Image (cartoon, rainbow, N blue to C red; front, top):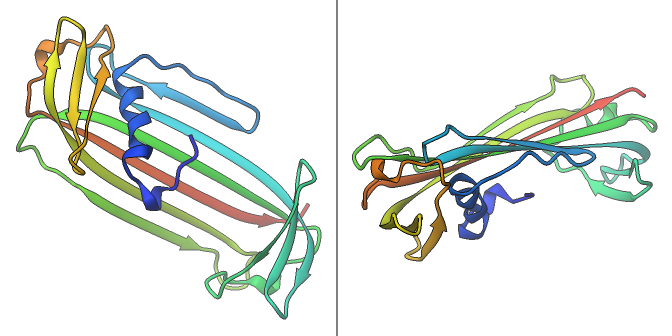
Length: 201
């Protein structure tokens, strides 16, 4: 489900809507784990996935602020640390860089007129001066679609998105479609959190 929250668009949120209106299942894989939660009878749900990666510092070019990392599969890559990476000088060869990305997609329906919070929020926290480099960045984006039509017989709903496109989705069999009307809003909220820490092996 990897997606770039900073460019959240229709292609990114459609899987979330599909998840919320159709059946889903938990599917942990290797270093990626995830789960889906739904409330029986209600449209919507939450999908959370977490991806973790550990790499070892194998080279440091302090003059050019570059660090070479090798992951657990043996893949090697060199990164340039921008000025925003505090405590770069604390890095040492052999340090373990651990990164964890958690993505949450939440979809829920609400009646027109209920408070909206379209837009995005970014939170950033850095390691204290003198510590090993580390950071936590969390970004939330939200868009709202409107229910354009409901086909109870075939258990389908068509949503109109802010960019003017419409898409039709199957509705889960447990959802009470009588509770929803044309004009209702479907909120798609995506949150991505990235945590990076550097530790001694």
